[in-house]
Image (cartoon, rainbow, N blue to C red; front, side, top):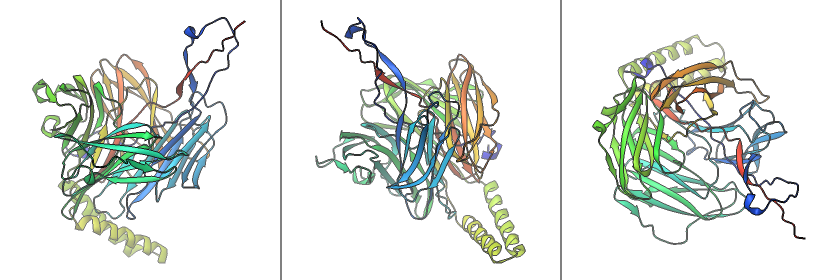
Length: 515
Protein backbone atom coordinates (compact mmCIF):
# COMPACT_ATOMS: atom_id res chain seq x y z
CA UNK A 1 0.00 0.00 0.00
CA UNK A 2 1.43 3.42 -0.93
CA UNK A 3 0.74 6.71 0.75
CA UNK A 4 -1.25 7.92 -2.22
CA UNK A 5 -3.50 4.86 -2.11
CA UNK A 6 -4.57 5.52 1.45
CA UNK A 7 -7.76 7.55 1.78
CA UNK A 8 -6.04 9.88 4.19
CA UNK A 9 -3.15 12.21 4.49
CA UNK A 10 -3.00 14.28 7.57
CA UNK A 11 -2.20 17.35 9.46
CA UNK A 12 -2.06 19.37 12.60
CA UNK A 13 -3.79 19.99 15.83
CA UNK A 14 -3.55 22.70 18.33
CA UNK A 15 -3.22 22.67 22.09
CA UNK A 16 -3.81 25.62 24.33
CA UNK A 17 -3.00 26.20 27.91
CA UNK A 18 -2.67 28.93 30.42
CA UNK A 19 -3.51 30.00 33.89
CA UNK A 20 -6.08 32.27 35.48
CA UNK A 21 -6.49 33.27 39.05
CA UNK A 22 -10.14 34.11 39.53
CA UNK A 23 -12.58 34.21 42.42
CA UNK A 24 -16.36 34.48 42.48
CA UNK A 25 -17.80 37.15 44.72
CA UNK A 26 -20.76 35.70 46.59
CA UNK A 27 -23.32 37.26 48.89
CA UNK A 28 -22.73 36.33 52.56
CA UNK A 29 -25.03 33.60 53.80
CA UNK A 30 -25.25 31.06 56.59
CA UNK A 31 -23.26 28.37 54.76
CA UNK A 32 -20.04 27.15 56.37
CA UNK A 33 -16.67 26.35 54.86
CA UNK A 34 -17.71 22.70 54.65
CA UNK A 35 -20.13 23.59 51.87
CA UNK A 36 -17.52 25.43 49.79
CA UNK A 37 -17.36 24.05 46.24
CA UNK A 38 -15.05 24.08 43.25
CA UNK A 39 -16.66 25.87 40.32
CA UNK A 40 -15.66 26.48 36.71
CA UNK A 41 -14.50 29.82 35.41
CA UNK A 42 -13.81 30.77 31.81
CA UNK A 43 -10.15 30.74 30.85
CA UNK A 44 -9.05 34.36 30.65
CA UNK A 45 -5.30 34.09 30.14
CA UNK A 46 -3.00 31.67 28.29
CA UNK A 47 0.76 31.71 27.74
CA UNK A 48 2.34 29.18 25.38
CA UNK A 49 5.93 28.66 24.23
CA UNK A 50 7.14 27.74 20.71
CA UNK A 51 10.69 26.48 20.09
CA UNK A 52 11.42 28.22 16.80
CA UNK A 53 13.79 26.82 14.18
CA UNK A 54 16.62 24.50 15.13
CA UNK A 55 19.06 25.79 12.48
CA UNK A 56 19.43 28.63 10.01
CA UNK A 57 18.53 26.21 7.19
CA UNK A 58 14.98 25.69 8.45
CA UNK A 59 11.89 27.80 7.84
CA UNK A 60 9.89 28.07 11.06
CA UNK A 61 6.41 29.51 11.41
CA UNK A 62 3.97 29.93 14.27
CA UNK A 63 0.19 29.96 13.90
CA UNK A 64 -2.33 30.96 16.57
CA UNK A 65 -6.07 30.84 15.90
CA UNK A 66 -9.22 31.54 17.87
CA UNK A 67 -11.86 28.89 17.14
CA UNK A 68 -15.16 30.78 16.78
CA UNK A 69 -18.44 29.93 18.52
CA UNK A 70 -16.61 28.96 21.72
CA UNK A 71 -18.22 29.76 25.05
CA UNK A 72 -16.54 32.60 26.93
CA UNK A 73 -15.81 34.68 23.83
CA UNK A 74 -18.46 37.26 24.73
CA UNK A 75 -15.87 39.71 26.12
CA UNK A 76 -13.05 41.51 24.25
CA UNK A 77 -9.75 39.67 23.92
CA UNK A 78 -6.43 39.61 22.12
CA UNK A 79 -3.90 37.00 20.98
CA UNK A 80 -0.32 38.10 20.47
CA UNK A 81 2.66 36.22 18.95
CA UNK A 82 5.92 37.62 20.33
CA UNK A 83 9.59 36.96 19.78
CA UNK A 84 11.48 38.47 22.67
CA UNK A 85 10.02 41.94 23.16
CA UNK A 86 8.94 42.22 19.52
CA UNK A 87 5.37 41.50 18.46
CA UNK A 88 5.22 39.36 15.31
CA UNK A 89 1.45 39.24 14.82
CA UNK A 90 -1.83 39.61 16.69
CA UNK A 91 -5.56 39.02 16.36
CA UNK A 92 -8.54 40.52 18.17
CA UNK A 93 -11.57 38.61 16.86
CA UNK A 94 -12.89 35.04 17.15
CA UNK A 95 -12.32 33.15 13.90
CA UNK A 96 -9.08 35.04 13.20
CA UNK A 97 -5.65 33.46 12.70
CA UNK A 98 -2.24 35.01 13.35
CA UNK A 99 0.71 33.57 11.42
CA UNK A 100 4.34 34.66 11.60
CA UNK A 101 7.82 33.40 10.74
CA UNK A 102 9.90 32.57 13.81
CA UNK A 103 13.69 32.75 13.58
CA UNK A 104 13.96 31.88 17.27
CA UNK A 105 11.77 30.86 20.19
CA UNK A 106 8.42 32.63 20.31
CA UNK A 107 5.56 32.94 22.78
CA UNK A 108 1.81 33.14 22.28
CA UNK A 109 -0.19 35.14 24.81
CA UNK A 110 -3.98 35.27 24.86
CA UNK A 111 -6.21 37.19 27.20
CA UNK A 112 -9.87 38.01 27.72
CA UNK A 113 -12.40 36.44 25.38
CA UNK A 114 -9.79 34.98 23.02
CA UNK A 115 -8.22 32.70 25.62
CA UNK A 116 -11.10 30.17 25.35
CA UNK A 117 -10.76 28.29 22.05
CA UNK A 118 -7.11 29.22 21.45
CA UNK A 119 -5.13 26.77 19.27
CA UNK A 120 -1.49 27.05 18.27
CA UNK A 121 1.08 25.24 16.16
CA UNK A 122 4.66 25.63 15.09
CA UNK A 123 5.81 24.11 11.80
CA UNK A 124 9.43 23.60 10.72
CA UNK A 125 10.31 22.93 7.07
CA UNK A 126 13.71 22.25 5.53
CA UNK A 127 13.50 24.03 2.14
CA UNK A 128 16.72 22.49 0.81
CA UNK A 129 15.01 19.31 -0.33
CA UNK A 130 17.49 17.17 1.59
CA UNK A 131 14.93 14.95 3.26
CA UNK A 132 14.93 16.32 6.79
CA UNK A 133 11.27 16.80 6.10
CA UNK A 134 8.60 18.35 8.24
CA UNK A 135 8.31 18.92 11.98
CA UNK A 136 5.30 20.30 13.83
CA UNK A 137 3.78 20.46 17.29
CA UNK A 138 1.36 22.57 19.31
CA UNK A 139 3.07 25.19 21.45
CA UNK A 140 2.93 23.85 25.05
CA UNK A 141 2.13 25.77 28.24
CA UNK A 142 4.63 26.16 31.06
CA UNK A 143 4.22 23.51 33.77
CA UNK A 144 6.00 22.18 36.85
CA UNK A 145 6.48 18.69 35.40
CA UNK A 146 6.34 17.03 31.98
CA UNK A 147 7.52 13.84 30.30
CA UNK A 148 9.12 13.62 26.86
CA UNK A 149 9.42 10.36 24.91
CA UNK A 150 11.16 9.63 21.63
CA UNK A 151 14.64 10.90 22.43
CA UNK A 152 17.85 9.02 21.76
CA UNK A 153 21.62 9.41 21.84
CA UNK A 154 22.81 6.75 19.42
CA UNK A 155 25.21 7.63 16.57
CA UNK A 156 23.42 9.72 13.96
CA UNK A 157 20.66 10.89 16.31
CA UNK A 158 20.56 14.44 17.61
CA UNK A 159 17.94 14.98 20.33
CA UNK A 160 17.59 18.30 22.12
CA UNK A 161 15.28 19.27 24.98
CA UNK A 162 14.11 22.84 24.47
CA UNK A 163 13.13 24.58 27.73
CA UNK A 164 11.30 27.90 27.43
CA UNK A 165 10.28 30.10 30.34
CA UNK A 166 7.43 32.42 29.26
CA UNK A 167 6.92 33.72 32.81
CA UNK A 168 8.28 36.84 34.49
CA UNK A 169 10.55 35.03 36.98
CA UNK A 170 13.49 32.63 36.64
CA UNK A 171 12.96 28.87 36.82
CA UNK A 172 15.22 26.09 38.11
CA UNK A 173 14.84 22.75 36.34
CA UNK A 174 15.91 19.12 36.86
CA UNK A 175 15.97 16.61 33.97
CA UNK A 176 16.07 12.86 34.64
CA UNK A 177 16.85 10.45 31.79
CA UNK A 178 15.41 6.92 31.59
CA UNK A 179 16.78 4.27 29.21
CA UNK A 180 16.11 0.60 28.51
CA UNK A 181 18.22 -0.17 31.58
CA UNK A 182 16.36 2.25 33.86
CA UNK A 183 17.02 5.76 35.21
CA UNK A 184 20.43 7.38 34.81
CA UNK A 185 22.01 9.37 37.59
CA UNK A 186 23.08 12.78 36.35
CA UNK A 187 26.08 14.53 37.80
CA UNK A 188 25.63 17.74 39.73
CA UNK A 189 22.88 19.10 41.95
CA UNK A 190 22.76 22.66 40.65
CA UNK A 191 19.90 22.11 38.21
CA UNK A 192 19.36 24.09 35.03
CA UNK A 193 18.47 27.76 35.29
CA UNK A 194 16.04 29.08 32.66
CA UNK A 195 15.84 32.86 32.99
CA UNK A 196 12.52 34.69 32.63
CA UNK A 197 11.57 35.02 28.98
CA UNK A 198 14.51 32.88 27.85
CA UNK A 199 15.07 29.51 26.16
CA UNK A 200 17.71 26.93 27.11
CA UNK A 201 18.59 23.85 25.03
CA UNK A 202 19.90 20.63 26.60
CA UNK A 203 21.47 17.91 24.44
CA UNK A 204 20.25 14.43 25.32
CA UNK A 205 23.62 12.84 24.55
CA UNK A 206 24.99 14.78 27.53
CA UNK A 207 22.46 13.01 29.76
CA UNK A 208 22.43 9.47 28.32
CA UNK A 209 25.38 8.62 26.07
CA UNK A 210 24.82 6.11 23.24
CA UNK A 211 21.33 5.18 24.41
CA UNK A 212 19.00 4.32 21.50
CA UNK A 213 15.77 5.12 23.39
CA UNK A 214 15.46 7.74 26.12
CA UNK A 215 12.50 9.10 28.07
CA UNK A 216 12.91 12.35 29.98
CA UNK A 217 11.20 13.75 33.04
CA UNK A 218 11.40 17.53 33.29
CA UNK A 219 10.62 18.94 36.76
CA UNK A 220 11.04 22.42 38.18
CA UNK A 221 12.29 23.17 41.65
CA UNK A 222 11.29 26.80 41.22
CA UNK A 223 8.95 28.33 38.65
CA UNK A 224 7.50 26.83 35.46
CA UNK A 225 8.88 25.86 32.02
CA UNK A 226 7.48 24.67 28.71
CA UNK A 227 9.38 21.63 27.43
CA UNK A 228 9.48 20.12 23.95
CA UNK A 229 11.82 17.65 22.23
CA UNK A 230 13.49 18.35 18.88
CA UNK A 231 14.83 15.16 17.26
CA UNK A 232 16.84 14.69 14.05
CA UNK A 233 18.35 11.49 12.65
CA UNK A 234 21.05 10.82 10.07
CA UNK A 235 22.51 7.70 8.46
CA UNK A 236 26.02 8.82 7.59
CA UNK A 237 25.43 11.88 5.41
CA UNK A 238 21.86 10.86 4.56
CA UNK A 239 19.13 12.71 6.48
CA UNK A 240 16.60 10.28 7.96
CA UNK A 241 14.00 12.71 9.24
CA UNK A 242 13.14 15.17 11.99
CA UNK A 243 10.20 15.99 14.20
CA UNK A 244 9.07 17.72 17.38
CA UNK A 245 7.66 15.71 20.32
CA UNK A 246 5.23 17.39 22.70
CA UNK A 247 4.89 16.40 26.38
CA UNK A 248 3.46 12.88 26.71
CA UNK A 249 0.64 13.71 29.13
CA UNK A 250 -0.12 11.90 32.38
CA UNK A 251 0.58 8.21 33.06
CA UNK A 252 -2.57 6.07 32.70
CA UNK A 253 -3.70 2.44 32.55
CA UNK A 254 -5.63 3.11 29.35
CA UNK A 255 -3.84 5.04 26.58
CA UNK A 256 -4.89 5.62 22.96
CA UNK A 257 -2.31 6.71 20.36
CA UNK A 258 -4.40 8.20 17.54
CA UNK A 259 -3.26 9.09 14.04
CA UNK A 260 -1.10 6.12 13.01
CA UNK A 261 -0.80 6.65 9.24
CA UNK A 262 -1.10 3.95 6.61
CA UNK A 263 1.50 3.04 4.02
CA UNK A 264 5.07 1.80 3.98
CA UNK A 265 7.54 2.51 6.74
CA UNK A 266 8.29 1.38 10.28
CA UNK A 267 6.07 1.67 13.38
CA UNK A 268 7.99 1.69 16.67
CA UNK A 269 6.26 1.91 20.07
CA UNK A 270 7.96 3.38 23.16
CA UNK A 271 6.57 2.67 26.66
CA UNK A 272 7.59 3.64 30.17
CA UNK A 273 5.93 2.91 33.52
CA UNK A 274 7.03 5.65 35.95
CA UNK A 275 5.44 4.25 39.12
CA UNK A 276 5.55 0.45 39.10
CA UNK A 277 6.07 -2.69 37.02
CA UNK A 278 3.34 -4.67 35.31
CA UNK A 279 1.99 -5.73 31.92
CA UNK A 280 0.06 -4.13 29.06
CA UNK A 281 -1.86 -5.47 26.06
CA UNK A 282 -1.90 -3.82 22.64
CA UNK A 283 -4.73 -3.54 20.12
CA UNK A 284 -4.69 -1.76 16.75
CA UNK A 285 -8.04 -0.10 16.00
CA UNK A 286 -8.00 -0.23 12.19
CA UNK A 287 -10.44 0.76 9.45
CA UNK A 288 -11.77 -2.80 9.61
CA UNK A 289 -12.05 -3.05 13.39
CA UNK A 290 -9.87 -4.12 16.33
CA UNK A 291 -6.73 -6.17 15.71
CA UNK A 292 -4.98 -7.70 18.78
CA UNK A 293 -1.21 -7.27 18.43
CA UNK A 294 1.50 -9.72 19.47
CA UNK A 295 -1.14 -12.50 19.48
CA UNK A 296 -2.91 -10.73 22.31
CA UNK A 297 -0.13 -11.64 24.73
CA UNK A 298 0.74 -9.32 27.64
CA UNK A 299 3.87 -7.20 27.33
CA UNK A 300 5.93 -6.79 30.52
CA UNK A 301 7.02 -3.26 31.45
CA UNK A 302 9.57 -2.54 34.18
CA UNK A 303 9.32 0.51 36.41
CA UNK A 304 11.55 3.31 35.18
CA UNK A 305 12.78 1.45 32.08
CA UNK A 306 11.95 2.25 28.44
CA UNK A 307 10.36 -0.61 26.50
CA UNK A 308 10.63 -0.44 22.69
CA UNK A 309 8.48 -2.66 20.43
CA UNK A 310 8.74 -2.91 16.64
CA UNK A 311 5.13 -3.21 15.47
CA UNK A 312 5.82 -2.70 11.74
CA UNK A 313 4.80 -6.21 10.70
CA UNK A 314 1.92 -6.33 13.17
CA UNK A 315 0.28 -3.12 11.91
CA UNK A 316 1.32 -3.91 8.33
CA UNK A 317 0.75 -0.47 6.79
CA UNK A 318 -2.79 -0.06 8.13
CA UNK A 319 -4.40 3.24 9.13
CA UNK A 320 -5.00 2.78 12.86
CA UNK A 321 -5.02 3.95 16.43
CA UNK A 322 -3.18 1.96 19.08
CA UNK A 323 -5.04 1.08 22.30
CA UNK A 324 -2.83 0.23 25.28
CA UNK A 325 -4.43 -1.25 28.41
CA UNK A 326 -2.75 -2.77 31.45
CA UNK A 327 -2.46 -3.17 35.19
CA UNK A 328 0.08 -0.37 35.55
CA UNK A 329 0.12 3.29 34.50
CA UNK A 330 2.25 3.99 31.43
CA UNK A 331 3.28 6.76 29.08
CA UNK A 332 3.43 5.87 25.39
CA UNK A 333 4.41 7.23 21.99
CA UNK A 334 5.07 5.90 18.50
CA UNK A 335 7.58 6.78 15.80
CA UNK A 336 6.09 6.29 12.32
CA UNK A 337 8.39 6.60 9.31
CA UNK A 338 7.89 6.94 5.60
CA UNK A 339 9.66 4.84 2.98
CA UNK A 340 10.67 6.16 -0.43
CA UNK A 341 9.32 4.01 -3.28
CA UNK A 342 9.54 4.11 -7.07
CA UNK A 343 6.41 6.25 -7.42
CA UNK A 344 8.10 8.98 -5.37
CA UNK A 345 11.24 8.81 -7.49
CA UNK A 346 9.13 9.07 -10.65
CA UNK A 347 7.37 12.17 -9.29
CA UNK A 348 10.73 13.76 -8.51
CA UNK A 349 11.99 13.14 -12.03
CA UNK A 350 8.78 14.63 -13.41
CA UNK A 351 9.25 17.66 -11.13
CA UNK A 352 12.74 18.25 -12.54
CA UNK A 353 11.42 18.05 -16.11
CA UNK A 354 8.60 20.49 -15.32
CA UNK A 355 11.03 22.91 -13.67
CA UNK A 356 13.34 22.78 -16.69
CA UNK A 357 10.41 23.68 -18.98
CA UNK A 358 9.48 26.54 -16.64
CA UNK A 359 13.01 27.97 -16.94
CA UNK A 360 12.84 27.79 -20.74
CA UNK A 361 9.39 29.43 -20.85
CA UNK A 362 10.12 32.16 -18.27
CA UNK A 363 9.63 35.77 -19.32
CA UNK A 364 11.49 38.50 -17.46
CA UNK A 365 14.23 38.41 -14.84
CA UNK A 366 11.94 37.84 -11.85
CA UNK A 367 10.14 34.92 -13.47
CA UNK A 368 13.43 33.36 -14.60
CA UNK A 369 14.88 33.67 -11.09
CA UNK A 370 11.83 32.02 -9.52
CA UNK A 371 11.90 29.22 -12.11
CA UNK A 372 15.64 28.66 -11.57
CA UNK A 373 15.14 28.39 -7.79
CA UNK A 374 12.38 25.83 -8.39
CA UNK A 375 14.68 23.84 -10.67
CA UNK A 376 17.50 23.90 -8.11
CA UNK A 377 15.20 22.53 -5.41
CA UNK A 378 13.86 19.81 -7.70
CA UNK A 379 17.35 18.74 -8.82
CA UNK A 380 18.57 18.62 -5.22
CA UNK A 381 15.67 16.43 -4.14
CA UNK A 382 16.18 14.12 -7.11
CA UNK A 383 19.97 13.87 -6.86
CA UNK A 384 20.26 12.52 -3.32
CA UNK A 385 18.76 9.63 -1.43
CA UNK A 386 16.63 11.31 1.26
CA UNK A 387 16.26 8.11 3.26
CA UNK A 388 13.04 8.62 5.17
CA UNK A 389 11.19 11.02 7.43
CA UNK A 390 9.28 10.31 10.62
CA UNK A 391 6.54 11.65 12.85
CA UNK A 392 6.29 11.21 16.61
CA UNK A 393 2.72 10.35 17.66
CA UNK A 394 1.61 10.78 21.27
CA UNK A 395 -1.42 9.97 23.39
CA UNK A 396 -4.74 11.42 22.21
CA UNK A 397 -7.07 12.70 24.97
CA UNK A 398 -10.77 11.74 24.74
CA UNK A 399 -12.93 14.27 22.91
CA UNK A 400 -16.28 15.20 24.44
CA UNK A 401 -16.76 18.52 22.65
CA UNK A 402 -14.47 20.07 20.04
CA UNK A 403 -10.78 19.87 19.12
CA UNK A 404 -8.87 21.71 16.43
CA UNK A 405 -5.49 21.97 14.73
CA UNK A 406 -3.98 25.00 13.02
CA UNK A 407 -0.96 25.74 10.86
CA UNK A 408 -2.13 23.46 8.03
CA UNK A 409 -0.82 24.21 4.55
CA UNK A 410 -2.41 23.76 1.13
CA UNK A 411 0.97 22.58 -0.19
CA UNK A 412 0.76 19.44 1.98
CA UNK A 413 -1.56 16.44 1.96
CA UNK A 414 -3.48 16.49 5.24
CA UNK A 415 -5.55 13.75 6.85
CA UNK A 416 -7.53 13.57 10.08
CA UNK A 417 -7.71 10.12 11.67
CA UNK A 418 -10.79 9.70 13.89
CA UNK A 419 -11.14 6.73 16.27
CA UNK A 420 -14.18 5.61 18.30
CA UNK A 421 -13.51 3.33 21.30
CA UNK A 422 -16.17 1.19 22.99
CA UNK A 423 -19.03 2.22 20.73
CA UNK A 424 -19.95 4.07 17.51
CA UNK A 425 -19.65 7.84 17.24
CA UNK A 426 -20.23 10.69 14.82
CA UNK A 427 -18.15 13.83 14.42
CA UNK A 428 -18.44 16.95 12.30
CA UNK A 429 -15.32 18.18 10.47
CA UNK A 430 -15.11 21.82 9.35
CA UNK A 431 -12.25 23.95 8.00
CA UNK A 432 -11.36 27.52 8.99
CA UNK A 433 -9.39 29.63 6.44
CA UNK A 434 -6.55 31.64 8.01
CA UNK A 435 -7.51 35.32 8.06
CA UNK A 436 -6.12 37.90 10.52
CA UNK A 437 -9.44 39.78 10.34
CA UNK A 438 -11.56 36.74 11.16
CA UNK A 439 -13.40 34.09 9.14
CA UNK A 440 -16.24 31.62 9.47
CA UNK A 441 -15.65 27.86 9.26
CA UNK A 442 -16.79 26.21 6.08
CA UNK A 443 -19.89 24.06 6.34
CA UNK A 444 -18.96 20.89 8.18
CA UNK A 445 -19.19 17.35 6.92
CA UNK A 446 -20.42 14.49 9.13
CA UNK A 447 -18.15 11.50 9.66
CA UNK A 448 -19.49 8.25 11.14
CA UNK A 449 -17.09 5.93 12.95
CA UNK A 450 -18.00 2.37 13.91
CA UNK A 451 -17.07 1.00 17.33
CA UNK A 452 -13.35 0.30 17.81
CA UNK A 453 -12.39 1.50 14.34
CA UNK A 454 -10.44 4.37 12.80
CA UNK A 455 -11.63 6.46 9.83
CA UNK A 456 -9.21 8.47 7.69
CA UNK A 457 -10.66 11.83 6.59
CA UNK A 458 -8.69 13.56 3.79
CA UNK A 459 -8.75 17.34 4.10
CA UNK A 460 -9.37 19.64 1.14
CA UNK A 461 -7.60 22.92 1.84
CA UNK A 462 -9.88 26.00 1.70
CA UNK A 463 -6.95 28.44 1.68
CA UNK A 464 -3.16 28.60 1.59
CA UNK A 465 -3.13 28.11 5.37
CA UNK A 466 -6.03 26.96 7.51
CA UNK A 467 -7.28 25.14 10.62
CA UNK A 468 -9.39 22.00 10.96
CA UNK A 469 -12.10 21.68 13.63
CA UNK A 470 -13.53 18.34 14.83
CA UNK A 471 -16.72 18.33 16.91
CA UNK A 472 -18.21 15.22 18.51
CA UNK A 473 -21.94 15.23 17.72
CA UNK A 474 -23.42 11.81 18.54
CA UNK A 475 -22.80 8.23 19.62
CA UNK A 476 -21.71 6.30 22.68
CA UNK A 477 -18.07 5.75 21.69
CA UNK A 478 -15.13 7.64 23.16
CA UNK A 479 -13.57 9.72 20.37
CA UNK A 480 -9.83 10.25 19.84
CA UNK A 481 -8.40 12.27 16.93
CA UNK A 482 -4.97 12.49 15.33
CA UNK A 483 -3.67 14.04 12.15
CA UNK A 484 -0.77 13.71 9.72
CA UNK A 485 0.67 15.93 6.98
CA UNK A 486 2.59 14.50 4.06
CA UNK A 487 4.77 16.15 1.41
CA UNK A 488 5.55 14.29 -1.83
CA UNK A 489 5.20 10.90 -0.17
CA UNK A 490 8.35 11.30 1.91
CA UNK A 491 8.16 14.17 4.44
CA UNK A 492 5.83 13.42 7.33
CA UNK A 493 4.59 15.09 10.50
CA UNK A 494 1.56 14.85 12.75
CA UNK A 495 0.24 14.69 16.30
CA UNK A 496 -2.89 14.12 18.37
CA UNK A 497 -5.57 16.77 18.82
CA UNK A 498 -6.47 17.93 22.31
CA UNK A 499 -9.92 19.25 23.34
CA UNK A 500 -10.32 23.01 23.19
CA UNK A 501 -9.44 24.62 26.49
CA UNK A 502 -12.39 26.71 27.67
CA UNK A 503 -12.64 26.37 31.46
CA UNK A 504 -10.39 26.27 34.49
CA UNK A 505 -11.38 25.16 37.98
CA UNK A 506 -11.65 27.88 40.59
CA UNK A 507 -12.31 27.45 44.29
CA UNK A 508 -15.38 29.32 45.44
CA UNK A 509 -14.49 31.43 48.45
CA UNK A 510 -17.25 31.95 51.04
CA UNK A 511 -16.80 34.64 53.70
CA UNK A 512 -17.53 33.72 57.31
CA UNK A 513 -18.92 36.21 59.75
CA UNK A 514 -18.90 36.02 63.54
CA UNK A 515 -21.37 37.82 65.73
